[in-house]
Image 1 (cartoon, rainbow, N blue to C red):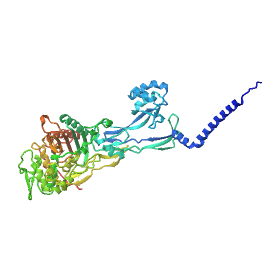
Image 2 (cartoon, rainbow, N blue to C red):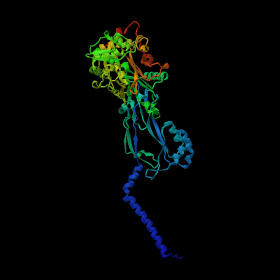
Image 3 (spheres, rainbow, N blue to C red):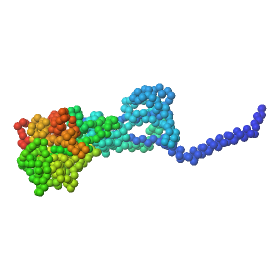
Image 4 (cartoon, rainbow, N blue to C red):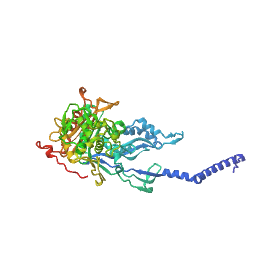
Length: 596
């Protein structure tokens, strides 16, 4: 037996080293298990606990016939965990990049990005790098077949507009964060969005959920569906016409709105230029503006129905009364008021001719007869100076000054559509009063809200706002407006064979640097048919149409032909029957008093 001699110094050195190691280990265990136990318990639970939000599916938007306008699809937000990507997986990254339509270097860089520095310069592990925001399920299945460790996706919902730019200003869009922006998407968000669900469970080391440890779950409630008053066929017709206007006149912008005057339901609403809500972030913000609600202009002659209707409703004039459109001065008491001029001398003509020829002087005389207070009140009653409450964001009230703020010219200029700023929808709404027997209806874009079984949850019925003029006054003015759309009227190019059309043109000089310009105009036309029983009301507004040979872009030569083309296509779509040639408006007009 051999004796092993160890020096005392070496023995104590080894002993103290071992003792120090075990003491340090024991101290560390005390720190982990006792002193900092709660802290690390929370960290462990945070890693294991899995709180998952299950987003509700956003409801669909359809037109009045059930055609799909906006829907929700399931997509995958794809990314990877750089720490889980193995060396052998790097050979598969080119195939992944090809499926994702991404540059190979970008995918390779994401797989190698294992750490990052925060704003304080501290280093952190990177456990998730997003590769693509939206991947369709078919592509995701192909990616899964590559078997790349650490590459996984999270299912989510994405909004889809299958008709691209169709009715974009009416529908609006939902952005990448799931927030509705403008249009029906915002107006009906309360019904469309649904209620998100959630579940609480645990996950393993590979970040996979362990359903057996699921402790709590709330099921998501999908959003309801919304049916619009819009008719997709009519919307198509309107948008095709806007393209024709853009091609023929190269305007700054153009807008068209079509409604049923009896109910106020919007059948079509469109602007040029428009945008694709699927790619809203690739479109200039200016093109997303709903010009029908936001852009102000002086209405011009389309406003003349207000003084005419007001004067007739007050019993101040009758259709056959003679109006002096020759004398440029109207004497009121001891004060002379200078009247605006007409394009052509008209002399002394009947009220019917004032409307047919669109006399500025005639309208001014009627305004003076009414007086400032009544003219202002009728303007408000027709809907000017206040919003229509259509429900879409961005609508402006327009400008209609109180009589106390009028200058000496306002009483003679307001009746011809100057000294007032309006939206296209306000002009449209004012004409609906005449088409609807003197009653102003609230314009509406939603007909009903329904569930996934088609059952109606909320119904939006037509709403009467108030009566503006008597039904007999509306009937008389409607007859006058039919004469406007005749061979002798200013809107002869709006005539539709077999149908009596009533309407009014408007041509407004724009204010440029404080002066009315001879080169910059807004051309418009608003009309309806059949005049005796109106079913379609349409308004066309074209901002600065460019005519050949320097000609002026009048409403009768720019907007009226568009109304005719739209009208003929709508007639074919709805199957409206033309009247018999020998039947006149007076014989077919049947107005009933509509109770308020």
